[in-house]
Image (cartoon, rainbow, N blue to C red):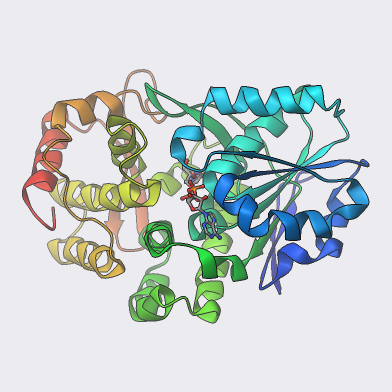
Length: 363
Ligand code: NAD
Ligand code: GLY
């Protein structure tokens, strides 16, 4: 097992990465203050790992609450159903919530933890690659609304993160590929040598090689922890972690949160961000082609289907959380490994980038 620390003064926490961790009682115990634990999971993950996690938590009379798997469940309706079960079960503010699942479970459970009894402890046990490299770390929690992604939420840090890479053995390949988008993101915004390593490690990662996956997860979490420790509330550099997300969130919202996986939408969004960077004269064409090539080799979509129209995407992008005083800010690339925040991009230029993503295989 390897451990990283997210340094946030009195709210810092460890990120443990290894195989078989979710069955280890000693890894949970130091982070549970009260006598009761509630494990929250979705229908797929609860069936696979719910029993093992509850067995590791028998000292805390664990209760397992579940909801239907999938992004449409990341909603106020699910939040209310879970909250009502906590209230009916008379759980008090010493309860610890354990988020067992992907980013949907982690974001929902974190938001519930932030708000139930004005805040209770929670532990992240991420089981998708995407959640292990991104959503379980850094304390962004929340739910979607029909008008936009993650528009209701809170910054609320877990007490610890247990990344059990053995869980990736059951993850469907499409989900593994979607998680790779966020791994590639770290190389693009902050670490060109990591991207070079990823380019050669892709066959091992796609083949489920646990050693390669642990290495990718460790470096991804290390980059994220450094950025979050410096800018927890996203007043500056943390926005770099949203490379491709403004385009991606718009694709997700425009398709009702059901057709595209988050990582797939972010992958195509990163390609659009690279194309934008090229058009802004920031990124050489060869680097833009490198971004397209790595995404394509990872198996991510590189073309926007015709039924997602440009005006609809621009509408959702205008409602993004990175809009400040009416001005949209976007993450671009100055080089591979160097993200930059840009504002004042002309809507016509954005429309050109979206139209190009419709038209070509490589944007
Ligand atoms: P997800 O939680 O929907 O999980 C994907 C699917 O995989 C689900 O069907 C789930 O049941 C299944 N699954 C999970 N683990 C499994 C396993 N080990 N074996 C078999 N099946 C398994 O999706 P996700 O991609 O993990 O997360 C996407 C969400 O994360 C989005 O809502 C996104 O907005 C959010 N996110 C949040 C942050 C953040 O900082 N909070 C960062 C990135 C993404
Ligand atoms: N996933 C973006 C962030 O955590 O800031």
